[in-house]
Amino acid sequence: MLYGLLQEHLATFVAHAARTYAAPLPKYAVAAFDGYLACGDLARGFVRCHCDGCGHDVLVAFSCKLRGPCPSCASRRMCNEAATLVDRILPNVPVRQWVMSLPFELRALAAKRSDVLAAMKRIFAEEIARVTTRLASIAGARTGSVGFPQRFGSSLNVHVHFHTLAIDGVFEKTAMGVRFHDAPPPSKDDVSEVARRVRERALLWLRRRGYLDERAAEEHSNETTEPSALDACTQLALAGGAYLARPFESGSRL
Image (cartoon, rainbow, N blue to C red; front, top):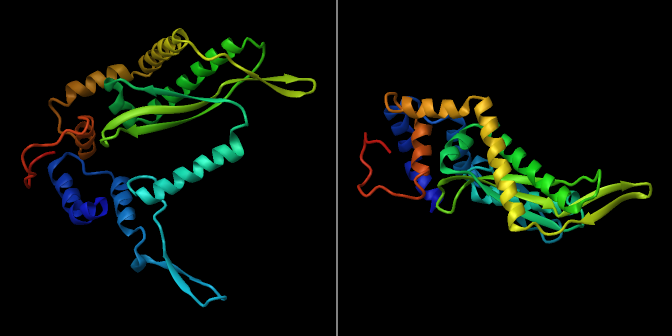
């Protein structure tokens, strides 16, 4: 269904966005969709696999290997990453998942600004580590985590949030090597403390870099300046899966 929808309407949509808005869709976005449409197409290239035993041939089409709109390549990348984490990175110790969702006012900013996204992820991981080491009460011990930002919700709306897998304990360096110590489960107060400190540090980081003032200025300027096609798509996706009641008309905006 997704492939058929893009195959039929992508060219029209790209032309409409370029004609209607102050700036067209970014080249990387169009390239991602074009790559998905070429994924698995034998006419775009393939590998011929031959079995000497039975004489059977199989043609395997090239894949786009993108992590954007292609469900097949994105799922394969996701499974490979999960296997790498389990087999090569995460130690055989308890692991706890922490999830942090950003408020609506910051979702568009984090979705468009990579430094904002990275800062929120880093601050969240540091506060998880701080509360974990405090609960373990082992002087000089260290812990660790791995986190992944997710940019969308169940209706493909812009919903920036973070999934972080944190070691549920600490590692202590001793004369005999490294020793692991379990940490007690965090209480509701501990979770609230993490949320409070993340909020305070995030606001401080955003203010120091002028993003809060910039966001207010952008909101004010959007009233008088023409938005880009990407801005229009972001605002539509922030609606959380809302759809227009009237049919799409040529020349109309999203």
